[in-house]
Length: 279
Ligand code: SAM
View 1 (cartoon, rainbow, N blue to C red):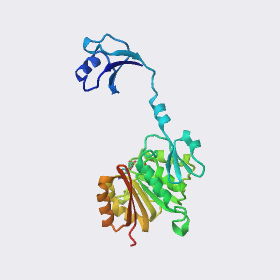
View 2: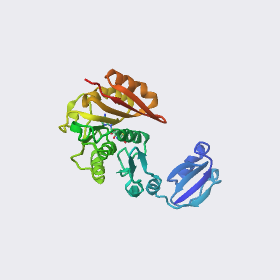
View 3: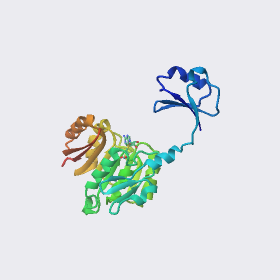
View 4: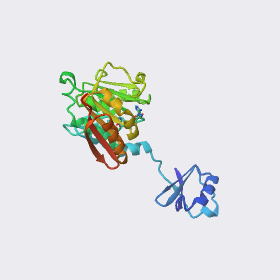
């Protein structure tokens, strides 16, 4: 890879950038006070940009670099890992293997970790009808990480829904990789909302837990739907909430009769838990 290093920044050398493009640069970027201009071949440059230096650099495999930096993420009793770090999960922790890919939810975002921690703190194995395992609804499932975490933590049945159809096969594959059978975790394109047809009918009337990693404005819109999906006193776990937007979510939960509203903060992100109205 041939790179021409020019002292300065994209701002201070703004007037010279066109000269580099005109000379055949295929790309320009700035790193550490140096403008890097990528070229296919060494070429004669105009005097205005002759204070730089040509360098031959090793090609960088960005994907390999990204994969090298990924670390296991501990969240309650679960450790979320990419497949190649499976061996690094400590004894006693439940491995949740997620292949980093196109769907959101590798565990590396604070909100995913907060939600898995919150699921981990519930006794999912003993909730549900006759204590046979909680029925969990994951709204905005992405990679399926929260529904799969729920199943690994003992939920009897988890349903993950997402409006983005691309996520569904990815989530299904992640469930398979984690050895969770389709009878215990299902994924479907859909959402909660005004049109009941958009919510998949899995033959489950109400859920013991609803978890949703979306955003504050959507939680505000969906708060009534969350209440309708939950059994009385069922557990609601909401995240994807910027701390500045907490009042909006709190007001929505008050409006819908949720009780025991509690917050967990992580930097600019918040997770809110609450109990569904008693009926
Ligand atoms: N649950 C995963 C996690 O916790 O890492 C992914 C969360 S990601 C922040 C939000 C997901 O919600 C995306 O996959 C997006 O397609 C989906 N989504 C956005 N709006 C939605 C809606 N109204 N109903 C259902 N899913 C929605």
